[in-house]
Length: 313
Ligand SMILES: NC(=O)c1ccc[n+]([C@@H]2O[C@H](COP(=O)([O-])OP(=O)(O)OC[C@H]3O[C@@H](n4cnc5c(N)ncnc54)[C@H](O)[C@@H]3O)[C@@H](O)[C@H]2O)c1
Image (tube, rainbow, N blue to C red; front, side):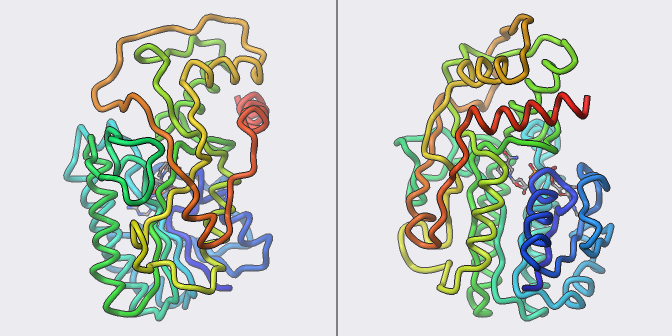
């Protein structure tokens, strides 16, 4: 399979490209290294250092003749989206339009967009399903929801299949502190350096934490699926990529404390604006459609993550 991975030098993209190459795929990475790193790039993948919003990206995608495009490149920081929503929109919406148009002219079979649980905003029901109300609380969530709409607008009339994979809070090796869902990376890097990690709010807020290898598994399963992903069912082309299990931030900190053998304190600060109180996403639709389920237990995933942060300190 020929695959283009935008954002393939990033946290999730780095792991995805390693898995795709390991499975025999021919991979081309487009990444401007704004938050990604050359260290994450698999040597067997072709790499073009390029902004996806640059006009030249279309020719690079066409030349790669991808069957599948996994579009991960994005402005991923919620705080940066609040500080500069225009830039967030340019990269996440404009960039998605550019990738979708290139997918059409390159004759791709399918595009997978890295969307986010942030499209739901404060949940009105739990667990969230793909048919749940969407009302993003932050500009990042708005741009991801609009990116989903843009895919529909560009790809459906052209007959290119697509899926909007709404990732829950992803964690694992290669993650930087400060990105979306970066609480594990933030805590782990602080614990590794002996700096006090800080919980914002009570710590009772819950999230659906999913290990990066499970997210990679979902992307591969969706890429290999031979049916139609953008079908007419509830939520259309949207698929939650999640565990279906809620973990409080306090529980997460304690699990990581064990994994990191951290004996110091855990600090507390007031809750931040836009932080939702509870979030857990049902993964049933992905399981029923393309046969994927998360398999990694949280404490095991935290152990692997802790080992990586301890080594790379
Ligand atoms: N990490 C999470 O918990 C999480 C949750 C939901 C959704 N997502 C989405 O998953 C995707 C990957 O996120 P990640 O956590 O691996 O973040 P990341 O910052 O590690 O990866 C993003 C990659 O995109 C590249 N990039 C950014 N802007 C670009 C541009 N204009 N042109 C080319 N490359 C560009 C960066 O250099 C980086 O390598 C993103 O779309 C993100 O919104 C992540």
